[in-house]
Image 1 (cartoon, rainbow, N blue to C red):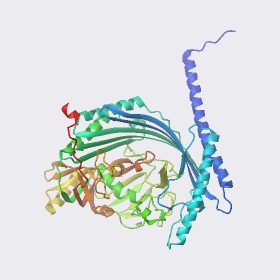
Image 2: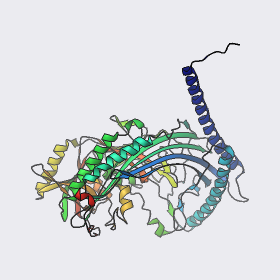
Image 3: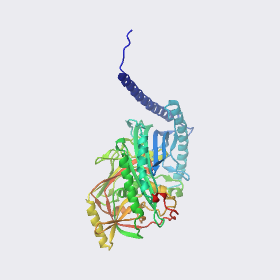
Image 4: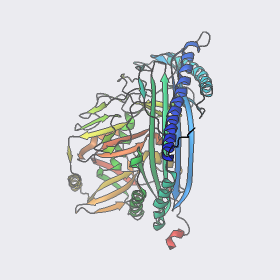
Length: 579
């Protein structure tokens, strides 16, 4: 018998094809096992899960979140962390009662419990997956019965008019995306962190700094009892820079910046990341050496990141997370402020020249990628563009799973994270202005307003403290000390005096006074350039979002010197100062 000789190249190619087919088949079996375990336990629970003389579930939803997360951190050219972890969770939503009154939207006792969730098997074994779902469903059902009983008792002692329904039954939907794989280039990312943080050796006045890269891949599987099935694959890369300096007087000066991308092709290279870090270090140095003022009351321009945070903190959060739940104990309700725009539909909340919409279906704005893009929300619903403000008047709200008194139509904005309840949250929120001008003209208008009230300068703010970073810093600073005054807006990190001749002088350590959502209506004019501001809702990589807005001129804002406690500076200078 003559043996047929096959060239090595063909053997290699054949092996690659077989391997690729095996991987594809394995992925399909993985998805099939996950979905089969979810659907089988869901069907059984809907037909058999009931306690004697008590209500059976009218709706059940299962969510499996599969995460692969890489964290690399560094300081002064050295790595301080490099870890990779895979985790998988199952979250169960069991509802008893009906859509008008069920166990949700009610907080009994002294804390707001998280949803029913647990870790689940990483291996896609059908029995292991289903058994954990079975146990968690049983627990969630019993918790639901208890909460509904307490809620009914609460409502019997209260007179409540026009209470909205508790749930909007979602329309059946199916969406199956491609899964994402954790193909992180760890060595390249580590080298980038080392190279970028090496720059801080040249800035001894920045006494503490850290650059952290968080790369995450998330694959979410969802089924519910109303015949919805969804699978969504996401990835996000976050570069977070934190800095702290001390002035000669011992005052803390903080700096923070964040870069977020959702495609491998958009990850900065080593030179780009180093340039970004150096730019932040230069601005940080200028703020440490900046002068101070005791107070200011006059016109202010917010631009770039500052404009993004301004709208995020005063507008976005007040059209999100509606409706607020009922609280059995009033003191608990005080810890969870109600969004201020929940009952302001059909009322003016912005100047008549501003319109606002939220559209998670937008992947980019003027060729700039948007982080809030998704094709199905966390409740298996297709997202829609929602017109929120028309000619300054609030006309709609973001809606997740529950209606409000004013809005009862779902619009695909149910977003959440593991251990956090689904809520009505934004995707890509866009602010459009019909009264806009160039930035130079905006500054000129500000200076004319200053002249009218005998001010020799106006203020331009280019960065506010990130809302997530500010919350983490409220009690304990990045380097000693304790938090200062609480405000509706986080403190500005980059502030500049602008004089009549156009020159700018940096000012440090200011905080806002008397800021409320009413200030949104005090916008006099906007710039003509739209700026994309990316952020993470609740600092969760599961909820990236984008905000598109122009620079804004506010007729009057009050700022004062920070009231944060001052700790003495280090006794001896940084050893880097001698190099």
